[in-house]
Image (cartoon, rainbow, N blue to C red; front, side, top):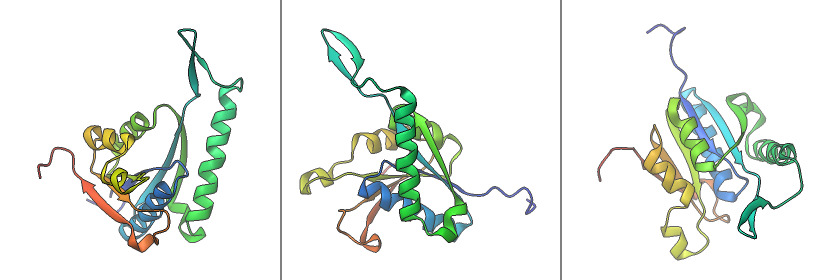
Length: 169
């Protein structure tokens, strides 16, 4: 394979602004730097809804574009705070309307790795995988790396777990 046709490793990372997703982004960028790869930082958004008299209705009177713009600002803020300017050219930001798990699974179709943070709120919850991470582990089209860690932990102390779809323990 010639250098001109060599595929650049692509890492998809789910970002929602939480400390675990920030750690996932930092890890993905470091990995992309070491492999010559690229990172797609993805934030999925949905219009909040609630039940009113047996009918689902929007929770807010805002336009969908308002939610998309807020998501875009969140993602851009996380990237600017967590990614060194020298590495920013490796990161492409994408804001997508949809359920986070499905958006990440769809994005994993042509990725080499999917990275997500696991939100553990207590010692018990930390042992469990969040719903988005669990869905991704079972349905992603590529290996999934789950970044686990408490917000107070340094980036070097973040624990990670790699799950390869179809592999048995």
